[in-house]
Image (cartoon, rainbow, N blue to C red; front, side):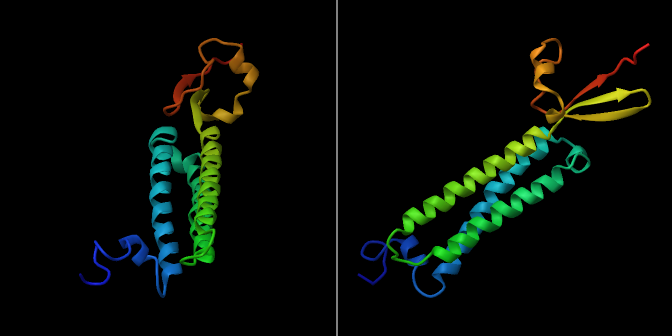
Length: 163
């Protein structure tokens, strides 16, 4: 049987992450996975929380760029720094990096979620954007038609002017 074959040699992943350039291949793999996860997460934000032109107009683009920039660069960079094939504790190091990256992404998505447009209100002669974070909890607790913030994009509402 030939050396490195599927039956007698090391597993394919072990061969891929061994030898010269293994550190860079591990970092590149982590980068590709991070980009995939970030793309799926921000597609949710773009399609559900900030539909249409609201993503750019309401600042979703800037928030997403910061979150993705931090999340997509730090994880792969740390993996590239700590990766050494056969290193004792490598699995622990990579697990910690993955958990920290997931926590950072979850926090970033929660900020984007809280800043999402909840209502688009027609006031006098223009439309005003009302973000979920701008509505005080005591207003939500009071009940009524607006006791729950919309989760799937903003609702259009009209405002009665006081007389």
